[in-house]
Image 1 (cartoon, helix red, strand yellow):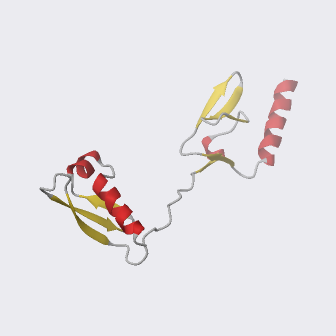
Image 2 (image 1 turned 60 degrees about the horizontal axis):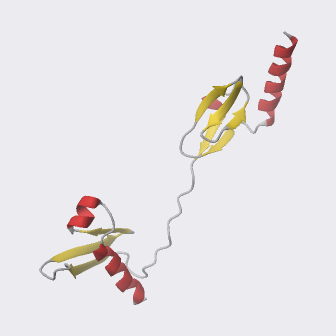
Image 3 (image 1 turned 180 degrees about the vertical axis):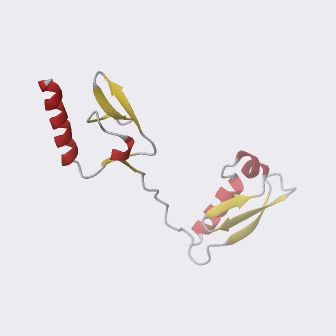
Length: 126
């Protein structure tokens, strides 16, 4: 009984030393109990056994956007010839988002060679 009281007092002391909430970096977390100890996973941070989800504050990582590399108007629209030379595609930039109406860009949802070439051409002339 004495050890239970001592552990309870230690837990209360540990929680009182913590600034209101336990700050955990990441996009998600869970509580996991192993061998009488409680952890915040996936970081495996040991916390007092009476820690609840309400005691934890999730700190989402900052999203760093690259600086706008094109000076002047952020809107660009360029007609680019296809690699075979038989067709044309429209490459657009609107508010930091590049699009192209070629199959690679539309169906694979990736930056196609037309967008890459247009970016290279614009950045070379700055």
